[in-house]
Length: 212
Image (cartoon, rainbow, N blue to C red; front, top):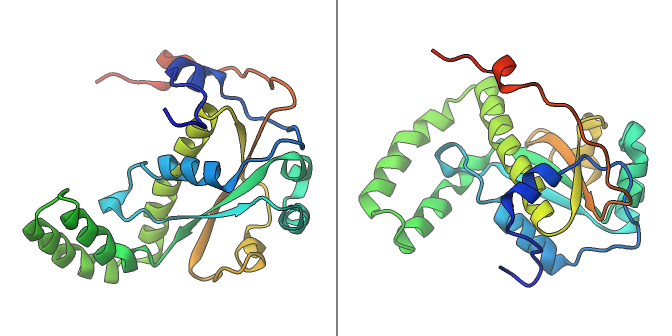
């Protein structure tokens, strides 16, 4: 366990997670610790390992002040949090295929012939992928990394809140990203909860599951 991580207790991580509305504004998260959290979150699975997620970590007062007007009714969460992680999906994620697969070969994760076969098979597929299919793929992958990020944050002693209510048509350009390339997924506030938050009811497994 790293010097920053607080627990490996899976039940504590899962059952202790809450969507926190107000944070302790005096608590800061160092860049070193945030990098470690993002590295672990990025172990999430993705379609053919293209890892289409991209993060903008907004941890300065200036950055949060810029974000606040775009966050609609979520301003208090944004301003009191240690940081806000804006999660985006990169529509040009396949541009990194060569780097990803070449490093996998170099590290001994796959043989060269598998890498070549994968690149040859998926290059034309991605080149001809429709906008809708690309968006669906990215949304699924980015959802996986976002959930993993929230659980990793909990293991590090922090709390989070996923936010979908914000000005998605403005967020990319406001923080220097190409609007046509990067799809806004969600905002994740992260920090030390000012209170324990509230438990919420979950539907029983019998209601949400069918057995065939």
